[in-house]
Amino acid sequence: MISHLYIYPIKSLGAISLQKVVMEKEGLRGDRRFMLVDAQGKFITQRTRPELTRFVLSETVGGFLVKDVVSGLAKELPWFPVLGSHLQVEIWEDHLPAREVLDGWSDWFSKALAESVSLVQLTEDSPREMKAKYQTDLAKNTSFADSLPLLVVGSASYQALEDRMEQEVDRLRFRPNIIVSSETPFIEDSWAEIQVGELRLSGAKPCARCPLVNVDPYSGESDKKTLKTLASFRTLNNKVYFGQQFVPISLGEIQVGDEVQVIRTQDAVY
Image 1 (cartoon, rainbow, N blue to C red):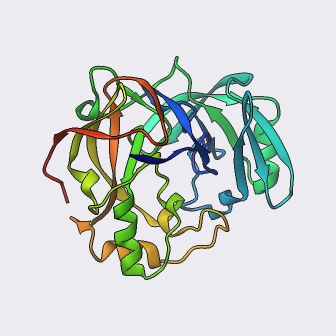
Image 2: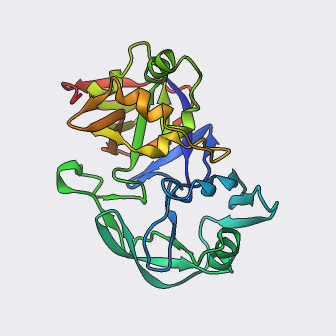
């Protein structure tokens, strides 16, 4: 059963918790369609700028409100804002054009961060293509997520980590889209295909984790305990795994409380 649904409208900024959401070809509607880039067009994240946790997001009728908890200033961003020219942006190995968001957004973030940055949006005319081996007949493109459109984590996987850390772990450290109630830790690793209502998802690959999980999603404070503990029992070929990445096979609306049916299983990579 789905226990939580999250989207992150602007990559590496605050999460929005939802009760229901529509699945699009590029992932959950509204998830990581916006991104901040530096003066060279390279994406920025909490990995190197934990201060991005200062921006808290909440849903509004036509989009979402971005609040800077440090300054107290807030600004509403519509889902379909006024866009300017294309900027060439870089996100990991991908280089693609994205449209700059107008209405003073780049200046607003630049002043808050004391750094020249631009807010851009991913648009249909310049998609970001997934690697061919992860594509489905339906879905060829992804969002501004690190890799694939959707991250699913089982609740028992969090519990296994907490048992070893001997403390609670904030779920948002791992930036999941869907948390599923589960009894067996890391059972999601073996899900090759799942169905939620009319929606089907392909289990593409496990998610390799980075030091971002060490950053407290609210305070921006960082320590090495979370990743170090996870690495002690979830390391394979020098990568630390937590959660499974999925790609849509079919589309539809999902909501908290929906049952998750496993259609096909696979041998877990880990």
